[in-house]
Image (cartoon, rainbow, N blue to C red; front, side, top):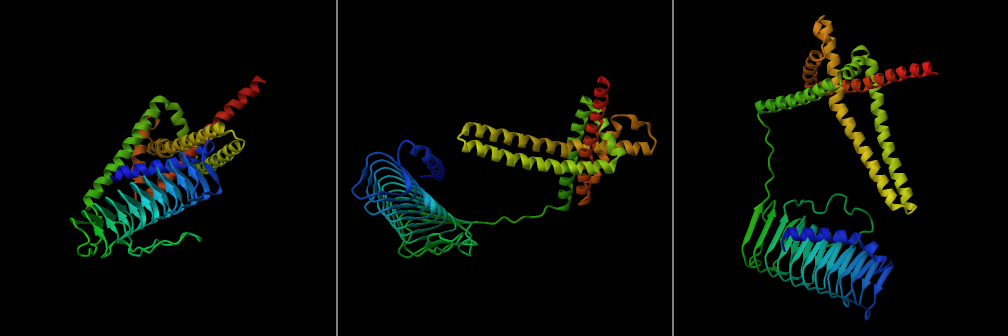
Length: 435
């Protein structure tokens, strides 16, 4: 079995495990503790959701179980596939087809008729398997009999059993310290075997085919444990080489040039589509720079508050509708809130990076040309081009440039406040005169 097939099987299983609850509405068993006693036979597929599940009897079809503790006792038999997800999964009985499991601690000491595909923190395999063993997780202890090939990717694997075919091991990310920092993650976790990091092969192990492994260091392979070839690939950590100064300078120049062109294109579009509106909004930045900066800061804070309020209110209202069993309406409301929040963030991003700095460029260029008493100050293009070049150069200064860019964006946001205020003042006298 290839790696992509294994990954696909695990993803399919996780999707299936999430479907257990709806399936239980029509068939299956659920509750605090579910037990299939010895002598009891389930004639079809069985779906189970519980805190603890114990199988001592027989399931003639597939068994899909989602529980904190899953136990297949020695007398338990599953004639189809076993799909299990839980904190601890123990298989002491017989599964005549595939075993696909995901959990914290997996223990397989029984008989498997086909493949074992596992994902989780730790697995301990001491049983018999007729075909392939695949595990993706932190560690694995393999002391049983695998009929065909082995595939493992994780921190450490210890092999003392038999593998009928080839073995492929990837321990390239193994940490020398062993168990991860902060282990155990929380109290009450079941015990797991101690497995050293990397690849460990005991003298009693037997690998009938080839052994291929990727690791940081070459492992010690006892003589006679591998009948085929041993291929070791060392994981090389690429060293980051700092580019020469002229390359850094070229990259910096290209980056600033691209930024200049982007602002030039957006600003040109604004001046072509709405020239008077653009120049009118930019005017407060030149005439009232400090008030523009202050109002821009207020707008930025208010926008952040509104986004947080939108997220919280959407979540609360959606949850309320869901509790009222209006799941369809709750889903659409949540989607609408998500779209509104994303649209608002996108709009603020465009305004912050482009529109506000274009307005600041026009105000800056106009101020410079007026200081030199140039007639070009009355043009709509020369102030924009001059101010844009000066702004891009100023914001390219290390550290200081980032501060200047923020100031320009805040002033640009504040100028919108003066434009809105002016529009409201124009509307108020007009409405008063009509009265």
